[in-house]
Figure 1 (cartoon, rainbow, N blue to C red):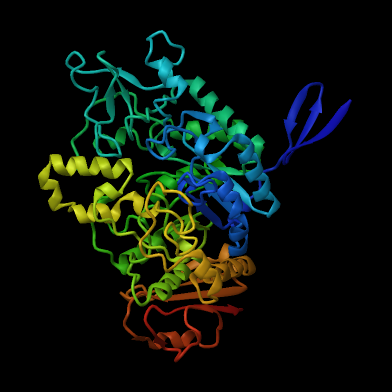
Figure 2 (figure 1 turned 45 degrees about the vertical axis):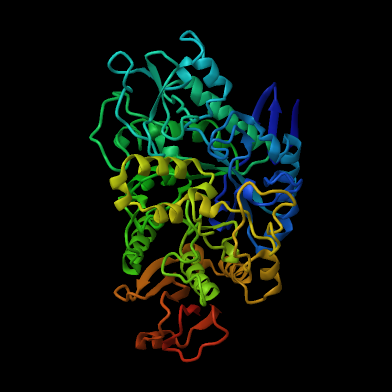
Length: 577
């Protein structure tokens, strides 16, 4: 007897106790616009000062009105919160101040009822040191979980770490286990021990976690620092570096592709899911190797080179002057390099980056909204899946911290310890720059209104809201010329014109230092995006070429003169062939 059951979103065929998931993977993510929520800073429903799941549910209609069709949630798992949830103590439970599993299931249902999908964060390079696996692993050398982590004997009788590697938070990548001669590897905070993916039991645990959430209704995963899961097994000292010593030993390790393919074949291929990888310090060729569909690994990754354009050696705290021409070349490299081979993501903000207002040659003053619209047009209409980070649609800016005491992030605390220990580093990273670039700039509470706590909480917020609350959700919804409605228009345009999904990227005016312009072209359509990134008025005769194109969107009410671009003026033009 054959019985067909409907379980959550997946058809299951049950015959002689054999269960087969018949769900076919689609390319829905190519038509997605994804909104990132940082849960602790989004909306607090119970007045404890932390955002929570019920707070997210209460704002789903706001996101539906914006027009996004997928939500990415930064971690909501059970965690001691040393790194705001990226240190997971239990992958199958929820951080209690955020809510319960029942709240989470209800949130998934409410998201799906509105025609949206949901991504969770997969944090699989490391766990929390409070995870039961790790507590067992360090309790005894005979623990069945001992080999779940990377534990090595120290040098010189245990007085020195096994290697001189440093992690991403500017400290040694090793921590001694009590008064023993052994150390565990942690590429991030001490409370984030790295998992040992060489152990097949660890890989099976991760597969079980994926299945658990996919069966609950999750539509995919943002895969945290996923290109670090494979380490070179020699564990040798490396040449000291101002950035990350030993990185070639743990970035894009020798078995990375094998591990990702295994996850895809054993789990992800059986669901209509997507994966987007956070692949740190990757070049174009690395991304292609991870995302070409035939390889069956990741669907796409984030383009961090475009976000690191004003960083030196890929280190955001080391200043590198922003130049629009260099940014154009980077964008063209990725757009042309991935075209017809893989798929891209489009990102200008996230929880690890400072705000885009006042960055990338945009203006935080008189032209704040106009320049934010120009930037939005520029990045949103390239080929790829656009991401919007919470508050980006409101033109939220950096809070302009005056002291590290105003911050909570583990990374900036470590940076300050390093600056105080090695005074010469302050020549490279003055205190003001460290504060300007710290991750908490993007983590201040969402500005729902202009009240004292910005409508985020009735209690004391975990991190103080921006002092400047003029650009908030209430104001944006009341102003038809707000950035919110501009993003709403961009989302509608993206869904209406196939050239935005499928067209080739053709750069224009590449030598111009103030204008970012490009075409998207198919044999049926042509879309042109022209964005000025200066307060100056610009008169460009070459704009006459597009005079007979239809104007789809602009950040000004009209076109004063076709060859004239006013401060930060941006146009989206269209022509059917």
